[in-house]
Length: 303
Ligand SMILES: Nc1ncnc2c1ncn2[C@@H]1O[C@H](COP(=O)(O)OP(=O)(O)OP(=O)(O)O)[C@@H](O)[C@H]1O
Ligand SMILES: [Mg+2]
Image (cartoon, rainbow, N blue to C red; front, side, top):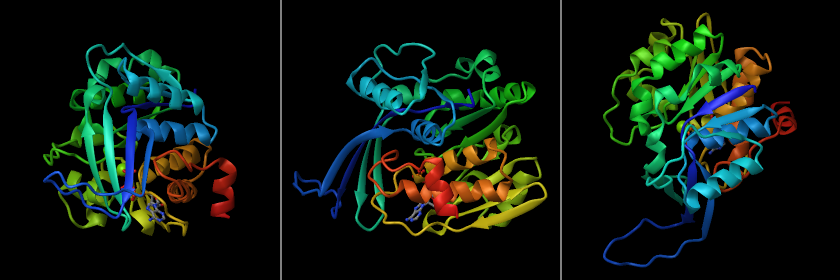
């Protein structure tokens, strides 16, 4: 296996329309609705598999209809599912995403099984079988977060590289992850997450602080593309002009492009170029995985 992705897998119900929900039993009309594979880890894993990487996903899903659908979509994409245990009595997580025409989104998430992963579920045997381990949606998984610094330290001891996409903290608490980041090879936040995690508004200063501890920072910035800082260098990569249908999961597809680039041996600038191309191309369809790029797509887009 090339890589192990660790984290959330669940259906996303993506609703599209020019509406803001109104209470008082008001009925409003949508222009589209899709039930698709969601969860940052699942979307990243599907993106990696599409780019030709042998990809395993360590996740907990429930023994229910949403769990069955999640499993089926992952298998269709060639992702090997590793279930540490069967979750009985816990519903599979679900996100309902209201995607407005002006590109803004509201997301309602039932954590369910998403919060069930524990650090000890990531065994040394899992780590020893891969070249890279990527962890997604940290703040939805407080139990995993509590022991993740140790998981990454074990990975490093086994010669396995590591990456982390915390995504947003819905509690707004942004508990310190300094110890985890000090053990993280690639930190992959968006602009707002980089500021929230570091408590620093100035992006160069926020990144420099992390780079001093040896962590490479690759920051997503929506349509504008991305920036990256690593020990000894930095770069900027533009986003690509595409027909945007839905930006859900663009950051997760970006992660897949970046990891595929690095695991193919590209230098940082090349890998960040693959990342922005993979992110932009993924926005051409509704949901996170509908329009994910192949290696050929990336090469055509990057030129
Ligand atoms: N509107 C857009 N047009 C073109 N490319 C986009 C657009 N939005 C995102 N992208 C591409 O996707 C990448 C990641 O996007 P973004 O900054 O939205 O990540 P994110 O906030 O982590 O997303 P999410 O967590 O919702 O998946 C960008 O670097 C860019 O390449
Ligand atoms: Mg993200």
